[in-house]
Image 1 (cartoon, helix red, strand yellow):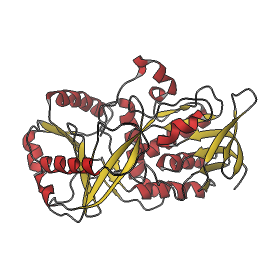
Image 2 (cartoon, one colour; image 1 turned 45 degrees about the vertical axis):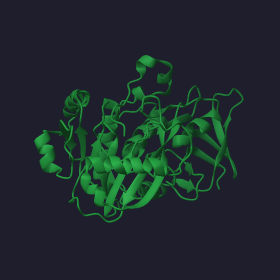
Image 3 (tube, one colour; image 1 turned 90 degrees about the vertical axis):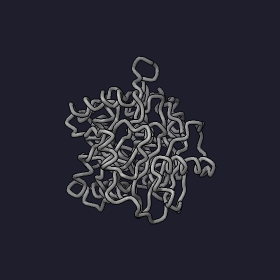
Image 4 (cartoon, one colour; image 1 turned 90 degrees about the horizontal axis):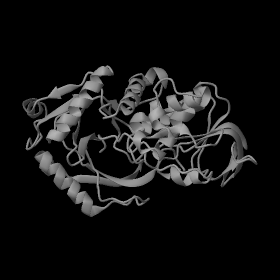
Length: 386
């Protein structure tokens, strides 16, 4: 393994490989990505649901999504690698007066940002989604450019493109320390299980583990790991394709087509922070019951695969894309709160801009600064979290 680089990227999930690609593409010098696992994208990236959407409640998240969706739509021209990507849309079922009011505000914002969302009446929901139990449904929003993509294709595509631009990716390398200069202000390298690597710049794309890694440099980044679980059924054709990612925010239930079956997910609000990623069978039964209540046809679906992964959650459900505290040459791009895959292209773009130009220009990311957590008035919670 090389013992020096201009920039070290720590973490080989979808965010890390996107950052490495965009840095290398812009000629940032010797870019070295270090991933502790044997393969890229083994953790949160490889265990996610694959959703890609722009229907968020805050402008910064919506803008990140729109920039990413454009990148996914132009994937072949830009990256030149295979990508399974289905723009079958997202449908958010609205089952309370509060949700209707909140989504009406978001709907205006989406239109202002150039989206073409649709507002469905209950009658339209019943017509478009005949598999839905309409109890309590007051309407829905739909955006056709939303959908879902293959996490492996996205990760491998960015990694291959990064290598073509000269980036080096090393697996089985765990960062064990961050080296600073004698004043404790400038990054000068990282310590790993395979030796020290000197560098002038460092960016942490370490997801749910970011708080632990940043602490090596004495900086607190408030990202907590929260378990999320997924069930995929055996082949199931009782819901006709194409059907959108269907979300019931009142329960956080969501489901979409996956490998001929149906992928089902839901948040467990009793879940406490921690790195446990075993599957909770009791909550899995609750997920299935909730899914069958909202879509009774799923009673005929047979669970085939079950797994759990980690969301990387911040207090306001927005990522941190910023300099790493007071340190010169250190940056962080993490804490996407379950939205990392869908925001990976945009995250790479704005992080490269920040690191090379001193400021992001494609999207205003001042709302994502680390110091916001010391000022409660700066926190603006993302409401559309599942």
